[in-house]
Length: 195
Image (cartoon, rainbow, N blue to C red; front, side):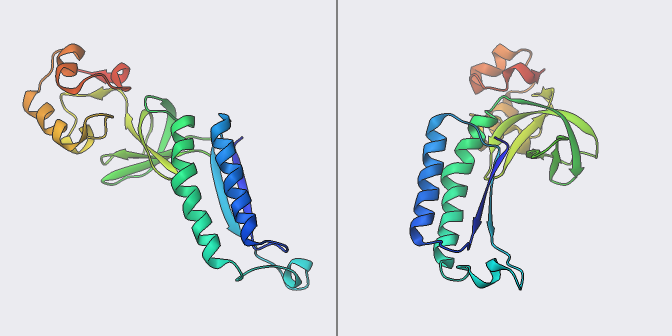
C-alpha cells in the first residue's frame, strides 16, 4: 500500500479508538505487508456540516499526541527498514535542497524524502540507502569512493560510525574491497563502493 490516513476527531471517537488503531498497525507490521507512509490528521470541519456539529476535537488531545508519537517511533522506522532496507538502490533522485545535508526525492506518488550527507548541487543521481529516519532515509550517492569520502559521510555507512570512520581515514588509501573490509567488515553498501 502506498499509505494510510488516520483522521482523528471524528464523531464517536474514544480513547479506545486510538488503542484499536495502534493494535491494527502492530498487526500490519507483523504481517509482512508493506506501507510506504502513515499520515495522521485532525478533522477540519466546516461550518454548516454535520462534522461541525458532531466531532470530538479537543476531547482527546493528549491521546492524539501520544498516538502520533507511538506511530512515529514504533511503526514508521521499522516499516521504512522493510520497504527500503540498507543497500537498496534508489534511482533518479532529484536533489532539490543543497546544504550540509542535501535532500531529494524520486519522481512519483509518495516519494521517499532522501537525505544525503554533503553539499550536493541540484542534479539527478542514484543513491543507496544506509539509514532510516521517522519519515525519510539517509542515502549515499553512488558510486561511493571510499578513498575520497569525507569522514562526516563515511560514518553513515552501516557498521562504520564515528570511531571506525577515523580508523578508516588513517588507513587510506585502500586498494581493494578486501583491504577495506579488514577494518570495516562487510556492509550492505559493498556493491556500490569504489577505490
